[in-house]
Image 1 (cartoon, rainbow, N blue to C red):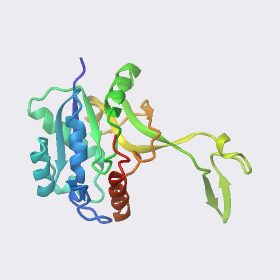
Image 2: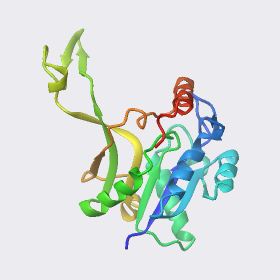
Image 3: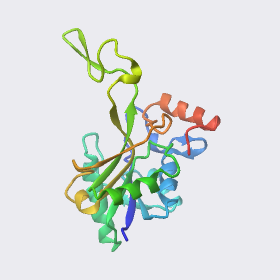
Length: 226
């Protein structure tokens, strides 16, 4: 039987929305939604928050998550998430905790469907792949602007919207990767399985005040979560 741990990467510095990981959303710190989500999955044995910020660490501890302390080198604007994740995995291993796979959740995605993580784990195991990421469909006509000309990418001019070529984007909801892949300094591999999530509210990644206000609106109107 495979064993899973959950890791949430949450550094303290944020320029666009200061302290975004601990700002209140419907009365709870934003990061708490991801912590609770991972803890409530019976297939995840332990949940850890990797951070350089004592306020984030305190919230993690209060919500029964372990804390991996990050140094400044792993917490600046140019730091790679893959390096922070590798550091967290090595620290967790040093505690004698056994696991095979890593579930990575970003703290700015509070609207994951309740059953999604279990569904992703089941698909990850049945697919035999080294990694899984969640993706969502792009439902608009996209193109590039080159030398003041618009060049369609996923459609042809005058093509109907319902006939456009399917494109998808990495929505950041869930990443699952084998431990050995993470220890190689990677979050996922080229053979990853793309798990499609077609939910507009689940795609919300909170990075600005407008995003946070919209998330608050969704919760007040009983939309988004679940």
